[in-house]
Length: 129
Image 1 (cartoon, rainbow, N blue to C red):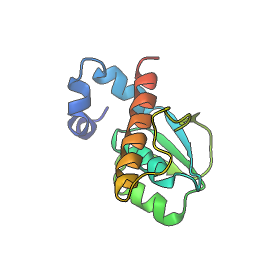
Image 2 (image 1 turned 60 degrees about the vertical axis):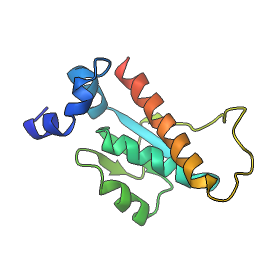
Image 3 (image 1 turned 180 degrees about the vertical axis):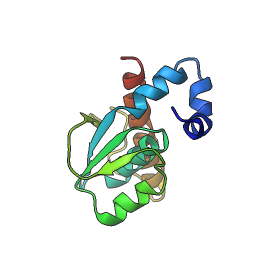
């Protein structure tokens, strides 16, 4: 890692479960997210967390130019492409307790929570390989 990357990801590197090797594993990995019409907010939140976390390549299948630009604004070290290979990130199956029809104002919070959990699970799996 370069010096500016060590400074950028210092909080990750200090975590005992991540460390320098785990952050390096993230930086050389590739994640693929299929943006569907059913839950684009959760998938975009997941992509944003992965880009900010330093994933090396992020494949956003079905993303518009505006969505790619929004994610790229938070991705200092992440190459964002719209087609390519990588380990899939799935937001399914939904937990049994997941609301089928969220109340007004809940949909953004639920999408943020669900996207964040998917990103963290993918990162943890990548680091622990």
